[in-house]
Image 1 (cartoon, rainbow, N blue to C red):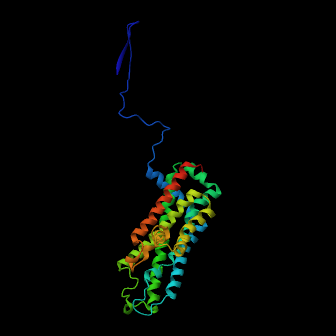
Image 2 (image 1 turned 30 degrees about the vertical axis):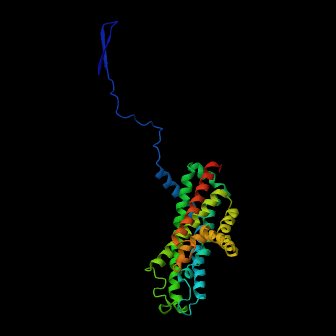
Image 3 (image 1 turned 60 degrees about the vertical axis):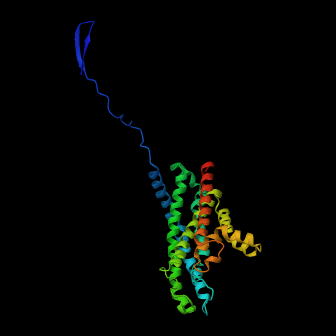
Length: 299
């Protein structure tokens, strides 16, 4: 409180109140609290999950990953035989061969998760609500990876379980050198099983990155399937040992599926985990290039 004197009249005016300066400036009514990256990602995850679960094809494609993988694996398990000891068969690879076909459905699921929005024009609404495009891509990647991981786990466990029931009748017995047939307590079988689930997940992420770059469903699916299935064909017809070895080591499908091997590892062009690492590098590169294209190009 302070007194104010009017020097012209000599009278003292009423005291005036002066407010002390506050410690912190109050937020203006229209100001908005800065949003954290985690809050943005959480909202993007919720939005992407809502879009994915409301699409009728999502459930059927996830089911097809499991069903197709198990069906092909069961057919392989029923067809192979081991009539004598050291028959040269790898039961883990036989039981998990369906992964080579289930991966195509996982790739289609990932492609449609991206290209479906471009075909309908909904991608503009998505980027208007969430301007940070890298956050949108991260949310799509996490969801597709999680869903593929779930479907792949069901597919792999189902294939191994049926293999344990069917393959002993085909000669895969302890007397023929298979004392713990397809048991997850066996470290090599556990690695083949877990690695196959990771393989399907990485294929989905590889496909997601390619779809983000190309933005058109049919073309993206064609590129992904050609990248996966042409390399084994080329590797089979290439007679030059040097180039054959390079294809086996660095093609995404050839290298990635080495994770399923449980026998004769010394004679393989690339080790199981190294091969899966090559596929992981393909997936990371695909997402990086797709993310850069997403940021630099208009919706």
